[in-house]
Length: 134
Image (tube, rainbow, N blue to C red):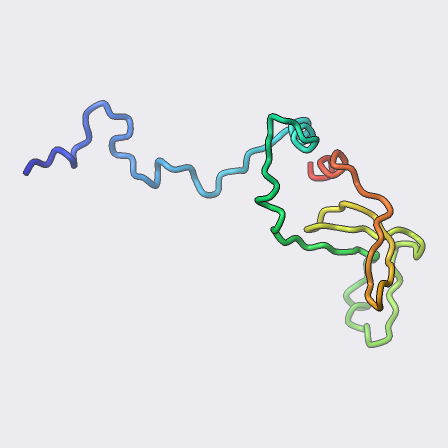
């Protein structure tokens, strides 16, 4: 029985390289796209035939941002049941609708069959969403 299989042939560039070293690093940076490329793909160009059926059942977190404010820790620990916190947003202003933390629309709260809902009043364009990511 010969031992030729354990010795790599001379001049082979992959000789002595382990399988781990030959694969890309797990923490390598993701591929970056220019905003123009994303806009072209988002507009449904034929060059990027995306099969949306693959992602249609992926769950996302939809949240409604009513408002925000900054308070000191001293004021925070003094809050009790019944305390009122004034928010920076006007009560007549539209709420922010976020998907996984990204603003996608503005809306107003509605009540449907004793449940809260949101009526979208303004949807953020794909171009604006891409600009906010960068």
